[in-house]
Image (tube, rainbow, N blue to C red; front, side, top):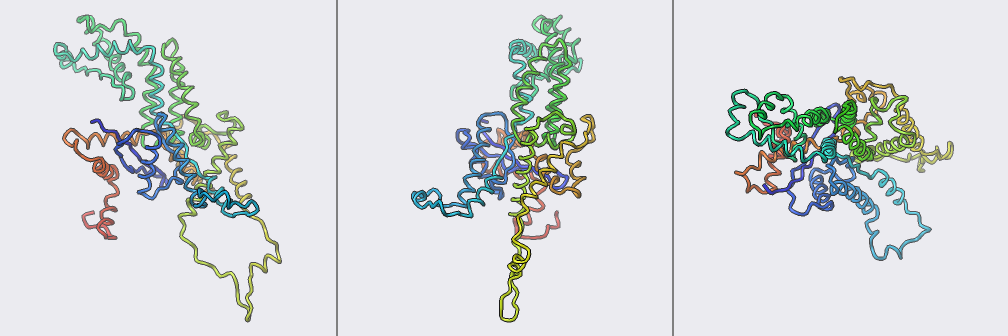
Length: 474
């Protein structure tokens, strides 16, 4: 349709339920630069009262503009905080007015706010798997195209009766925009080997005798990646669940001896795993999951563990900042009592008797870090345990440790893939058809927000018409 759109969704845990919301499917009318994407994302989120400092992570494909966009959102977070504390910092006279002897209390407050100012970039796991496939098939692209050419020939009128009479389905024609496109083709060919081999014997232009070995090896080598991609696209797939699928695929490929695709797949997965694990959000999810991080686990070296613990402690400060901002203001409390005609300040009196005291922030921080450090000593959960649910695991312990539960809700809400956005694009194609190609971007966006958030309609309609109670129809 010659239109470019940006899908934007958010997800979070509401107790045990992962809530996913479509914020918008935005038509892009300018060059897809990082700065342009950043502006569209921030402006769209702002419509829902979501500010940049509240972002934890952003799941993107591996495009450079997407990675840079996340960096620019982080920069906006910093700029907003500095402007909040020092609105006149950019004035021309700021340097002349600076007095080094003056200790501005806002400096410490600003530094504390900047400390929790971050957004982590998560590379889409499903897209990364597809890049592994592309990496590993580069050297055999010409052979795969030759097979595709024969598959297209099956659709000629003189061969169609063969398929109708036998009930054998036509192999799908590969399409680069579709994940696993070559695997789906080779799987069907391999499954119906005798039928297609017979066609090749009868009709020379359909002969696959020189390609059968490649078809068999391709099907064997890429089947684990296919299943990993399918499982990763589940709605509730935390990063650690995706990593489990990733490693299962890696292990199965390792068993494919004498397969031409084995080494290219493994090399690509090793390279791309390093990129995925450069994200602290990715590392944090693995560190908190007892299938990967347990007493004796060698997943992370000592310095890496310390880095993750520091990150999780910083995440807690970010969560606390958000919770504190959401609290209603407390009623002012009286700070003095009148004794006769004199004002008696009980706080000053207690300070004289017992001393000034010290802040517990440092002690509290040390206590939290100790808990986070102890995660690495938790009991191991078998990776083969299909019933294990990471969010249930932390929920069951929430009464003992509310802090870890709150941290876990954020860490495991980070999307491992862009599957939700892909579903939004599917809906976009259903709405924006050739018969509706004159729909404006704003109207398309509004239609999709309704279609993709239908469960909110019973609440939205009464609010829109000014009623606080639900109509009888709902």
